[in-house]
Amino acid sequence: MIGKQTFQFLKELKNNNNRNWFNDNKEKYRATAADFEDFVNAAIAHIARFDKTIAGVSARDCIFRIYRDVRFSKDKSPYKTHLGAWIVKSGRKSHDEAGYYIHIEPDGSILAGGAHNPPPDWLRGIRNKIHSNGKEFKKIIGSAAFKKYFKEIEGEKLQRPPQGYDASHSDIELLKQKSYLAVHKVNDNAVMSDDFAKRCKEVFKALYPFDRFLNEAIP
Image (cartoon, rainbow, N blue to C red; front, side, top):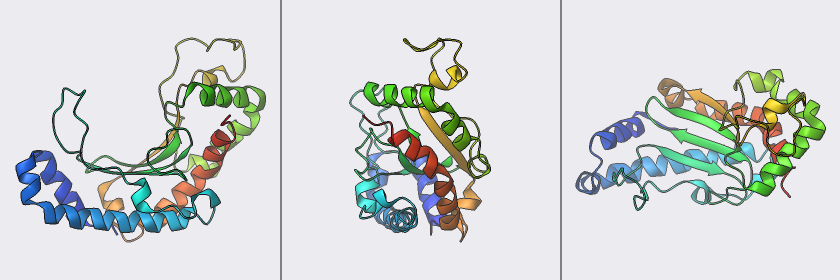
């Protein structure tokens, strides 16, 4: 369970994003990280029941480090002020497969998935699959199960049709996507509730056909 202490730590970290404060509160961080790891392991077990590719993955494979890479950033804050996990068979370092994302942040928690800035070959594969089988894709994103948790497909989008695709194609707006993301926002009270693990399971189960369609387009 993700409790109040997790949100309290993240709020305090946001207001004290420096190494001295973090080192003085290392035990709070360790407790927060341990709770999040337990929760992600539980989420993985739920997901593996309907997505067999996740079986055998551990939370440690999926959870992002709290330390920021500030080498090329104007913001030199040393720590992230959220907790995140990218659940896919290859773990958090994989950017070439669709999966399940858990993001915990005061007033900004989400459950999400899909393809974020997929590599050119995969993006081309997704577009080709939609071009030839848009009916299947629209059935997935228009289903009651999907619509219960997600609205429109999110992500950066081209202004003009991608090269090689007819502007008059019935699914041209979907083909303009550069990312194919589904995002479900969750308020703080819902995250801290006893049934949040159940909600994660339901959201990600509704997401699974979307992820599967995208992954079937991987070259």
